[in-house]
Structure formats: structure tokens, C-alpha cells
Length: 178
Image 1 (cartoon, rainbow, N blue to C red):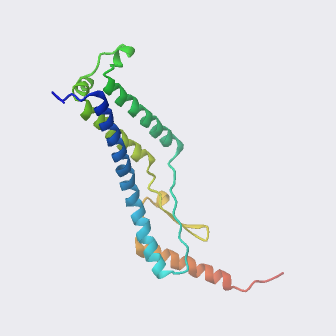
Image 2 (cartoon, rainbow, N blue to C red):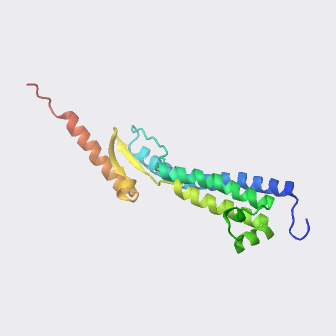
């Protein structure tokens, strides 16, 4: 390697390894944070309510966000490919290449990394709903999507206690037959 030039095969190998590594860590890190909250709440609730069954699932974002994220994923790879092969796409649109493109051609590794990580950041933001929905016996009792925040553990316990008391009260009421 001389003057910052990497042969194409080594550059491709470096980019693929960066994609694999960052793909593992960027998605997993985000999932761990969301999962950790769910896990903490689950453990605390199991201690208080040993007979309760708790399930978790991922909520998909709205379709337009999924489509934009998919487009960005493909566009990112196209831009990285153009940077690697050194092909200037701007004359096709009758435009002169901007300075950042010229910089990217001189600094291919950094340019590819920037495109990749910046695009991944936007894709992750688009795909993250932050949903935290709580139901008891298929009845919704809390929605982060509606409230805009997670309940504190104290709030959650109070909500569940109230719901369980109401369910017990409803189940123990005598049934009147007409």
C-alpha cells in the first residue's frame, strides 16, 4: 500500500469485513438496549406475579419507513460500488462532481466507511419503532406508542394490580340469568 492506495481486492475485503462487523454490532447493540428493558421488566414482574406469562415481539415500522430504509440499503451499496470503481455518476445527470465526491475518490476507504455508517444510522432510525406495548389477557393496558414513554416499574405494577383486581372482581360477581 503506497500513498493511501489499496489494491481493489484488499479494499473490497476490508469493506466486506467492515460491513459484516458493523452489521453485527449496530443492529445487535440497538436490539440489546430494547431487549434489556424488556428483560428487566420481565424479571421484576415474574418475581411479583409468578403465574403471569410474558411475551415479547418486535413491532414493524410503518411501510413508508421500511421502503425508505430498503432503498437506502441498496443506494448505499451502489454509492460504495461507484466509489470503489472510481466511476463518476454526475456527468450522466449533466452535473459537475461536487467536492465531496473528489475527496471520496482520494480517500476511498474513509468515504466508503462514511457512506456505510451514515446510511446504517439512518436505516436503523427508520426501522426502530421504540414500541413497548403491554397487554393483560389480550386487553391493552399500556402503549408507549400512544403515551410516548415507558411506564416506570411502579406505574406498571400499579396498572397490572388494578387490572388483576378488576378481573378478579368481574369473575367473582354472581351471574344473573334472566
